[in-house]
Length: 341
Image (cartoon, rainbow, N blue to C red; front, top):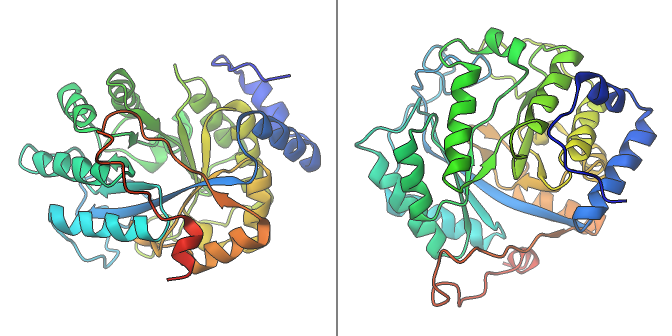
């Protein structure tokens, strides 16, 4: 029976899923996964930091916050052509989506036109586009939609209660407002958060409940395992148990059956067996490339090797009709074509 898409989950219901015996939980998640997705296809994205460091926000996990000394070199917004060069390289290496992240509280009037050109340029290559630029106004969101943006990433990070201990410069409600603007503009939502920040199990459950009870499930749900950055307040926090992380993936899959659940930051610390269990639990999206904004990520050839060992292939995309057929005529290289280069 196909699971009903719900937006009214209670804490007790989500807790009962989280508390299932591990084998039962993963079996249920895999069963849901197979009803909506090819179980051996994984969506592949590449993420580029287009403006690094000196962010005015005080997120305690982030190397880019101007509040902490993480020895990160500050950089201005990258030139449009340089960003497009990186997108071409990502496409040649097998990525189907190109994500661009800027360390801003919100985009400035000076920088925003350049951001729109980046979206148009990447879209013209036949790739999906994603941006994360901080808070957006209604007007900015509409302009991004008009430029052809496919996805906008804006994470809620953690539970509503624990959020206040992680960030003070932007409220939880501020984040929900930006997500509403994005949805209203017809842009797909990429929204998840980070686990392993010292939160409790109840916070992790509340975080998943909050995502599942949004007016529409995010099309992409990144679940990040904290990468501890020297100089941030969370550099010495205890590691999260690996099975707790896999449970998060499985419960997210059950709560949001049609969403792509992304195995995101922290993947470099995961061995192949843990990643395989995450795929079994319903993860079907990864970031691919040597860096995730400013933190390390498994190198491309390691991912290719793991995909081959597991019999996994990259998910093919169908771009919506925002582009002319002329622009899409050239066939993108497949993931395994890139392996022979």
